[in-house]
Each structure stands twice: as C-alpha cells, then as structure tokens.
Length: 140
Image (cartoon, rainbow, N blue to C red; front, side, top):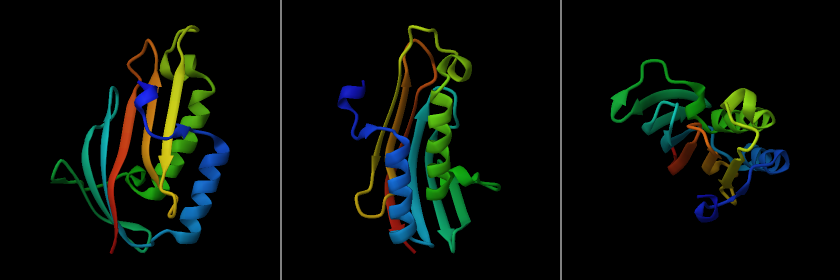
C-alpha cells in the first residue's frame, strides 16, 4: 500500500519546514477542496472557504456544515499532522495495534505553498487507516 503512495514519511522536520513555507507564502483567504477517507473518521468530500484565516463556509458531500471543525483548514491540517506524529509514538495505545503491527505515515506537501496535499496513515492489522487528499486549493 505504501509503495504506491505519493510523498515521503511524515517527520517533524518536514512538517515544520512546510508550515514555515505556508506561513511565508500561504493565503489568508482560500477555497479548499478535500477528500477524507478512512475506517473510523468522518469521511466525504469537503469544500471549505476561509476568509482572513476564518472559516466562512463549509460543506460535506454538498451539505452545509453548521459548525465546521478547524481540521478542515490548512492550519487545521498542520495541527492534525502534528497530532498524528504524537499518536504514532504509541500505536498500541492510540490505534489498538499489536506489537507486530507497523505504522506508516506518508505525506506530500505543495512545493511552493507548503500545504499538505496528501496524507496517508496505515496501521497494519488494524482498522485505523486514513487518507486525506487536498484536491484543489484556490485563492479567494
């Protein structure tokens, strides 16, 4: 599964470098379209409009979200990835993984703007897998 995934292993250094690129080159107002898939998460196609770093509009599968989570913003994705690194330190505790399980965290960042384009977490022998793909980011 991981051999066909785009990107590199998620590391604290890569995450920090990408966050700095986003801080320097990112957009305060943008439309983010993303696909979320996985075993134990809210899945679907999401469209989020952020204006001046605040969520202005959000949908999941074309249904408006009344109280969208910060997760669905670029800054929220960075926080999510940071949390993933922490959880990955104890896969048995957080993912119910056996000692023989392996955890893979693979990420691809936009080369110029730094935002995460695709993230894949796979924990062998569990139902704790997730894929987050940014399909489009446009300036508003």
